Image (cartoon, rainbow over all chains, first blue to last red; front, side, top):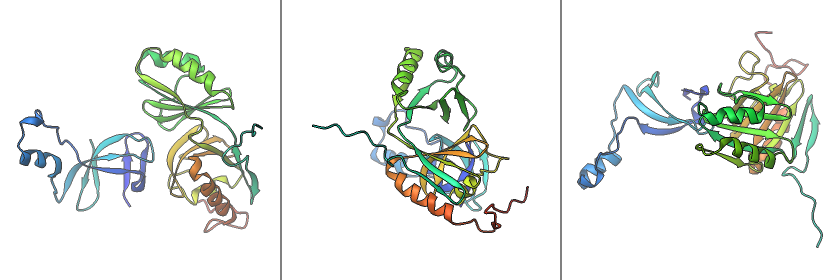
Length: 82
Length: 201
Protein backbone atom coordinates (compact mmCIF):
# COMPACT_ATOMS: atom_id res chain seq x y z
CA UNK A 1 0.00 0.00 0.00
CA UNK A 2 1.31 3.44 -0.91
CA UNK A 3 1.37 6.24 1.63
CA UNK A 4 0.36 9.22 -0.48
CA UNK A 5 1.01 12.81 0.64
CA UNK A 6 -2.17 14.83 0.11
CA UNK A 7 -1.14 18.50 -0.05
CA UNK A 8 -4.00 19.35 2.34
CA UNK A 9 -4.43 16.36 4.64
CA UNK A 10 -0.89 14.95 4.81
CA UNK A 11 0.10 11.30 4.45
CA UNK A 12 -2.85 8.97 3.91
CA UNK A 13 -3.35 5.39 2.75
CA UNK A 14 -3.64 4.73 -0.97
CA UNK A 15 -7.18 3.34 -0.47
CA UNK A 16 -8.41 6.88 0.26
CA UNK A 17 -7.35 8.05 -3.21
CA UNK A 18 -8.54 7.76 -6.78
CA UNK A 19 -5.97 7.57 -9.56
CA UNK A 20 -6.31 10.11 -12.36
CA UNK A 21 -3.65 9.04 -14.84
CA UNK A 22 -0.93 11.10 -16.43
CA UNK A 23 -0.67 14.76 -15.43
CA UNK A 24 -0.12 17.72 -17.75
CA UNK A 25 -2.09 16.33 -20.69
CA UNK A 26 -3.35 19.55 -22.23
CA UNK A 27 -6.77 19.78 -23.88
CA UNK A 28 -6.29 20.41 -27.62
CA UNK A 29 -6.45 24.06 -28.68
CA UNK A 30 -8.98 23.39 -31.44
CA UNK A 31 -10.46 19.90 -31.03
CA UNK A 32 -12.57 20.17 -34.20
CA UNK A 33 -9.43 20.58 -36.33
CA UNK A 34 -8.03 17.21 -35.21
CA UNK A 35 -8.20 14.04 -37.24
CA UNK A 36 -9.79 10.99 -35.59
CA UNK A 37 -6.33 9.53 -35.05
CA UNK A 38 -5.09 12.71 -33.33
CA UNK A 39 -8.24 12.85 -31.16
CA UNK A 40 -7.78 9.21 -30.18
CA UNK A 41 -4.14 9.95 -29.37
CA UNK A 42 -5.26 12.75 -27.03
CA UNK A 43 -7.99 10.65 -25.41
CA UNK A 44 -6.30 7.30 -24.96
CA UNK A 45 -2.56 7.33 -25.51
CA UNK A 46 -0.48 7.97 -22.43
CA UNK A 47 3.20 7.70 -21.56
CA UNK A 48 4.21 4.53 -19.79
CA UNK A 49 7.70 5.17 -18.50
CA UNK A 50 9.76 2.97 -16.26
CA UNK A 51 10.86 5.59 -13.78
CA UNK A 52 9.53 9.00 -12.78
CA UNK A 53 5.99 9.76 -13.89
CA UNK A 54 3.90 12.86 -13.18
CA UNK A 55 0.35 11.78 -12.37
CA UNK A 56 -2.99 13.04 -11.04
CA UNK A 57 -4.60 11.81 -7.84
CA UNK A 58 -7.83 12.73 -6.07
CA UNK A 59 -8.20 12.42 -2.30
CA UNK A 60 -11.66 10.86 -2.62
CA UNK A 61 -12.21 9.75 0.98
CA UNK A 62 -10.73 12.96 2.39
CA UNK A 63 -10.77 16.54 1.17
CA UNK A 64 -11.84 15.48 -2.36
CA UNK A 65 -9.19 17.67 -4.03
CA UNK A 66 -7.15 16.80 -7.12
CA UNK A 67 -3.38 17.20 -7.04
CA UNK A 68 -0.30 16.14 -8.96
CA UNK A 69 2.69 14.15 -7.82
CA UNK A 70 5.71 12.46 -9.36
CA UNK A 71 6.05 8.75 -8.63
CA UNK A 72 8.72 6.34 -9.72
CA UNK A 73 6.80 3.56 -11.46
CA UNK A 74 9.56 1.03 -10.82
CA UNK A 75 10.06 1.61 -7.10
CA UNK A 76 6.74 3.33 -6.13
CA UNK A 77 8.86 6.01 -4.49
CA UNK A 78 6.98 9.33 -4.45
CA UNK A 79 9.66 11.69 -5.64
CA UNK A 80 8.09 15.12 -5.54
CA UNK A 81 4.77 16.85 -5.24
CA UNK A 82 4.05 19.12 -8.14
CA UNK B 1 -54.55 10.66 10.35
CA UNK B 2 -52.02 10.56 13.16
CA UNK B 3 -48.66 12.19 12.82
CA UNK B 4 -45.78 9.85 13.68
CA UNK B 5 -43.15 11.45 15.90
CA UNK B 6 -39.94 11.80 13.92
CA UNK B 7 -37.28 9.16 14.44
CA UNK B 8 -33.55 9.48 13.94
CA UNK B 9 -31.81 6.82 11.77
CA UNK B 10 -30.56 4.91 14.84
CA UNK B 11 -33.57 5.71 17.01
CA UNK B 12 -31.52 7.43 19.70
CA UNK B 13 -29.03 4.60 20.26
CA UNK B 14 -27.11 4.85 23.56
CA UNK B 15 -25.00 1.93 24.81
CA UNK B 16 -22.14 1.44 27.24
CA UNK B 17 -19.67 -1.29 26.38
CA UNK B 18 -16.30 -2.14 28.00
CA UNK B 19 -15.27 1.38 29.00
CA UNK B 20 -16.77 3.23 26.06
CA UNK B 21 -20.10 4.87 25.49
CA UNK B 22 -21.57 4.97 22.01
CA UNK B 23 -24.61 7.07 21.35
CA UNK B 24 -26.33 8.80 18.51
CA UNK B 25 -26.70 12.55 18.70
CA UNK B 26 -30.14 12.78 17.11
CA UNK B 27 -31.18 15.47 14.65
CA UNK B 28 -28.02 17.58 14.51
CA UNK B 29 -28.16 20.55 12.19
CA UNK B 30 -25.49 20.42 9.48
CA UNK B 31 -24.84 23.14 6.97
CA UNK B 32 -22.29 22.84 4.17
CA UNK B 33 -20.58 26.11 3.28
CA UNK B 34 -18.41 26.74 0.24
CA UNK B 35 -16.72 30.06 -0.48
CA UNK B 36 -13.41 31.67 -1.34
CA UNK B 37 -11.51 31.81 1.98
CA UNK B 38 -9.72 35.05 1.02
CA UNK B 39 -12.78 36.86 -0.37
CA UNK B 40 -14.67 39.57 1.49
CA UNK B 41 -17.53 37.17 2.17
CA UNK B 42 -15.23 35.15 4.43
CA UNK B 43 -15.03 38.11 6.82
CA UNK B 44 -18.78 38.58 6.85
CA UNK B 45 -19.25 34.85 7.45
CA UNK B 46 -16.74 34.99 10.31
CA UNK B 47 -18.72 37.84 11.89
CA UNK B 48 -21.95 35.97 11.41
CA UNK B 49 -20.56 32.80 13.05
CA UNK B 50 -18.73 34.76 15.75
CA UNK B 51 -15.37 33.14 14.89
CA UNK B 52 -13.11 33.02 11.85
CA UNK B 53 -13.44 29.97 9.60
CA UNK B 54 -10.74 27.37 10.29
CA UNK B 55 -8.18 27.59 7.48
CA UNK B 56 -5.70 25.05 8.83
CA UNK B 57 -6.60 21.70 7.20
CA UNK B 58 -8.53 19.27 9.40
CA UNK B 59 -9.18 21.63 12.27
CA UNK B 60 -12.38 22.74 13.99
CA UNK B 61 -13.48 26.04 15.47
CA UNK B 62 -16.12 25.93 18.20
CA UNK B 63 -18.38 28.87 18.92
CA UNK B 64 -21.04 28.25 21.55
CA UNK B 65 -22.82 25.07 20.47
CA UNK B 66 -21.81 25.43 16.82
CA UNK B 67 -18.83 23.49 15.51
CA UNK B 68 -17.28 24.56 12.20
CA UNK B 69 -15.29 21.73 10.64
CA UNK B 70 -12.73 22.17 7.83
CA UNK B 71 -13.69 19.90 4.92
CA UNK B 72 -11.51 21.39 2.21
CA UNK B 73 -9.65 24.59 1.30
CA UNK B 74 -12.96 26.21 0.30
CA UNK B 75 -15.46 24.02 2.15
CA UNK B 76 -16.70 23.83 5.74
CA UNK B 77 -19.42 22.06 7.70
CA UNK B 78 -21.26 23.93 10.45
CA UNK B 79 -22.72 21.47 12.96
CA UNK B 80 -25.20 22.76 15.51
CA UNK B 81 -28.08 21.67 17.70
CA UNK B 82 -31.47 20.48 16.49
CA UNK B 83 -33.37 23.22 14.68
CA UNK B 84 -30.32 25.42 14.09
CA UNK B 85 -30.01 24.72 10.35
CA UNK B 86 -32.56 27.24 9.02
CA UNK B 87 -31.06 29.95 11.23
CA UNK B 88 -27.51 29.18 10.05
CA UNK B 89 -28.53 28.92 6.40
CA UNK B 90 -30.27 32.28 6.51
CA UNK B 91 -27.36 33.99 8.27
CA UNK B 92 -24.71 32.48 6.01
CA UNK B 93 -26.63 33.20 2.79
CA UNK B 94 -26.95 36.81 3.89
CA UNK B 95 -23.21 36.94 4.70
CA UNK B 96 -22.28 35.32 1.37
CA UNK B 97 -24.27 37.96 -0.52
CA UNK B 98 -23.57 37.88 -4.26
CA UNK B 99 -20.12 36.31 -4.00
CA UNK B 100 -19.58 32.90 -5.54
CA UNK B 101 -20.25 30.14 -3.05
CA UNK B 102 -23.00 27.98 -1.62
CA UNK B 103 -24.82 27.32 1.61
CA UNK B 104 -26.74 24.05 1.76
CA UNK B 105 -28.63 22.37 4.60
CA UNK B 106 -27.17 18.83 4.67
CA UNK B 107 -28.55 17.81 8.06
CA UNK B 108 -29.77 14.46 6.74
CA UNK B 109 -26.46 13.66 5.04
CA UNK B 110 -24.67 12.23 8.06
CA UNK B 111 -25.54 10.48 11.29
CA UNK B 112 -23.52 11.80 14.22
CA UNK B 113 -22.26 9.03 16.51
CA UNK B 114 -20.57 10.06 19.74
CA UNK B 115 -17.91 7.66 21.01
CA UNK B 116 -16.47 8.55 24.41
CA UNK B 117 -14.60 6.97 27.29
CA UNK B 118 -11.07 6.00 28.19
CA UNK B 119 -10.86 3.30 25.50
CA UNK B 120 -12.46 5.31 22.70
CA UNK B 121 -9.16 5.80 20.87
CA UNK B 122 -8.29 2.08 21.15
CA UNK B 123 -11.63 1.23 19.56
CA UNK B 124 -11.18 3.59 16.63
CA UNK B 125 -7.57 2.57 16.06
CA UNK B 126 -8.68 -0.95 15.23
CA UNK B 127 -10.18 0.24 11.97
CA UNK B 128 -8.64 3.61 11.15
CA UNK B 129 -5.23 4.14 9.60
CA UNK B 130 -4.65 7.75 10.60
CA UNK B 131 -2.62 8.47 13.73
CA UNK B 132 -5.01 9.32 16.57
CA UNK B 133 -2.27 9.53 19.22
CA UNK B 134 -2.28 12.89 21.06
CA UNK B 135 1.04 13.77 19.38
CA UNK B 136 -0.78 13.85 16.02
CA UNK B 137 -4.49 14.29 16.76
CA UNK B 138 -6.36 16.00 19.55
CA UNK B 139 -9.29 18.17 20.53
CA UNK B 140 -10.59 20.44 17.77
CA UNK B 141 -9.05 18.27 15.09
CA UNK B 142 -11.11 16.52 12.42
CA UNK B 143 -10.37 14.20 9.52
CA UNK B 144 -12.26 12.75 6.62
CA UNK B 145 -11.01 9.21 6.31
CA UNK B 146 -11.99 5.55 6.23
CA UNK B 147 -13.09 3.76 9.38
CA UNK B 148 -13.60 0.03 8.88
CA UNK B 149 -13.82 0.74 5.13
CA UNK B 150 -16.67 3.25 5.59
CA UNK B 151 -16.22 6.90 4.69
CA UNK B 152 -16.40 8.93 7.88
CA UNK B 153 -15.82 12.41 9.13
CA UNK B 154 -14.02 11.99 12.44
CA UNK B 155 -13.87 14.82 14.98
CA UNK B 156 -12.23 14.75 18.38
CA UNK B 157 -14.35 16.96 20.63
CA UNK B 158 -12.38 16.88 23.89
CA UNK B 159 -9.49 15.35 25.82
CA UNK B 160 -11.60 12.65 27.50
CA UNK B 161 -11.49 11.60 24.63
CA UNK B 162 -14.86 12.13 23.01
CA UNK B 163 -15.09 11.61 19.27
CA UNK B 164 -17.85 12.33 16.83
CA UNK B 165 -18.00 9.80 14.03
CA UNK B 166 -20.12 11.23 11.26
CA UNK B 167 -21.24 8.69 8.69
CA UNK B 168 -23.82 8.32 5.93
CA UNK B 169 -27.11 6.98 7.35
CA UNK B 170 -26.96 3.87 5.16
CA UNK B 171 -23.60 2.95 6.70
CA UNK B 172 -24.62 3.83 10.26
CA UNK B 173 -25.97 0.45 11.37
CA UNK B 174 -22.95 -1.35 9.95
CA UNK B 175 -20.58 1.07 11.65
CA UNK B 176 -22.38 0.78 14.99
CA UNK B 177 -22.11 -3.02 14.82
CA UNK B 178 -18.45 -2.71 13.95
CA UNK B 179 -17.75 -0.22 16.75
CA UNK B 180 -19.50 -2.35 19.37
CA UNK B 181 -17.58 -5.39 18.18
CA UNK B 182 -14.32 -3.47 18.26
CA UNK B 183 -15.14 -2.28 21.79
CA UNK B 184 -15.45 -5.93 22.89
CA UNK B 185 -12.07 -6.94 21.47
CA UNK B 186 -9.05 -5.75 23.42
CA UNK B 187 -6.30 -4.57 21.14
CA UNK B 188 -3.50 -6.94 20.28
CA UNK B 189 -0.80 -6.34 22.87
CA UNK B 190 -3.22 -4.65 25.27
CA UNK B 191 -2.64 -5.20 28.97
CA UNK B 192 -5.40 -6.23 31.39
CA UNK B 193 -6.55 -2.66 31.96
CA UNK B 194 -7.62 -2.70 28.33
CA UNK B 195 -5.21 0.03 27.31
CA UNK B 196 -2.94 -0.67 24.39
CA UNK B 197 0.80 -0.82 24.77
CA UNK B 198 2.09 2.64 24.05
CA UNK B 199 5.84 3.09 23.66
CA UNK B 200 5.68 6.78 24.51
CA UNK B 201 3.82 6.48 27.82
